[in-house]
Image 1 (cartoon, helix red, strand yellow):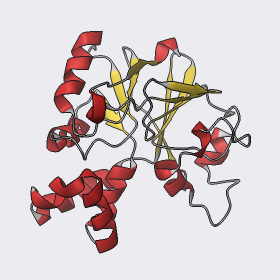
Image 2 (cartoon, rainbow, N blue to C red):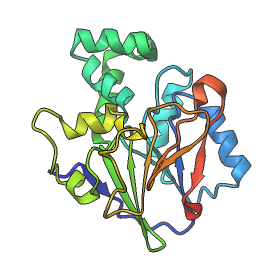
Image 3 (tube, rainbow, N blue to C red):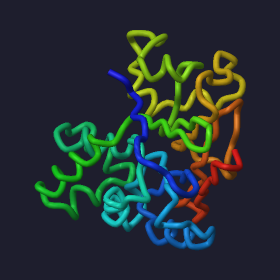
Length: 224
């Protein structure tokens, strides 16, 4: 089974990526208005972690119902999925900004939200204006997008989906096993907070700490 969903809807305008939103709905909307985002024609792809730590979590989940917005699954969506049935995961979730999920939502609302999160792809591939863009929350282990999509070239002891949501190794430039990712023009990730967007080979990290410093990165992919 492929880890990657291929976007199959037409994009009439521009393609953008946004770093981890973490419940900062108003900040997102303000930033979109600042850049002149066209809600009728543009597409915004989030790199996961729509929720936790911020205070407008439900509003951020509701973005998934908008035609102009989509997201991959982040580790905080994964914590919601795991925490609903697993006490250890729940404790981890609560200690990392997830208390709202258990305190503010009814069990039925929790289940419905978890079902939405389960529908989110681990990774997304979008073809736009002759280029192929990949989106994943935290990490891509392989140096080949097609191998990543098909779960190839990874140790049986390292789950590619968990690595994609939770891993950070590629951002470390001292780790020489990671190079240019073949088969894709650019891979966009979040998860690891950096003061400014970072680039290594054809990989970009755009979680610039929206919930911490109010600095939310929205990347115009026509300029990548």
